[in-house]
Amino acid sequence: MNLDHATIVTSDLDAARRFFVDVAGLTEGARPPFRVGGAWLYAAGRPVIHLVDATLPAHLPGDDVSGRPVPRIDHIAFRIDSGDAWRALIARMDAASVGYQRADVPLTGEVQLFVALSPGVVIEFVTAAQHASS
Image (cartoon, rainbow, N blue to C red; front, side):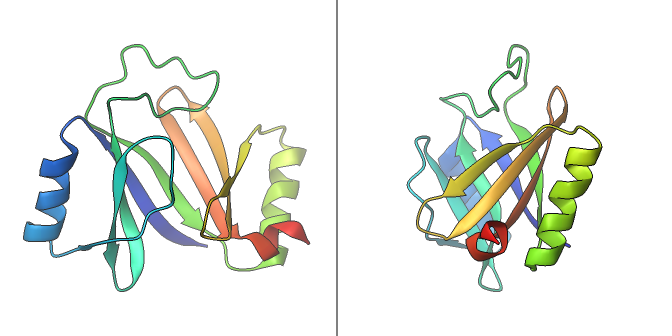
């Protein structure tokens, strides 16, 4: 398992994008057509920072979003690169009765699992769709 990306929710999307591109040296790249605005910023060919526009709430169903500060780091994501490791993760979550929300990512061929550990603490696991289907 590898750390995949961090998501930052901000009310000043353009300023955050400029900082990460102009100062930190990341490059803006392709982003799936999500319902909320944002930007994906790349390092070494991978989108490592996901910026999300805070004008719409970014949360999992059932989250209590009242009092969640903006800007904030919304979640961290771990990439799993094998079907066996993905299935083992799901088996461990099921055995521990850990609930999760699955999402298929448009255009990328990836599957995400979101786990709300506590209010305001979300962990994402992401893998290629072919690892999640077998």
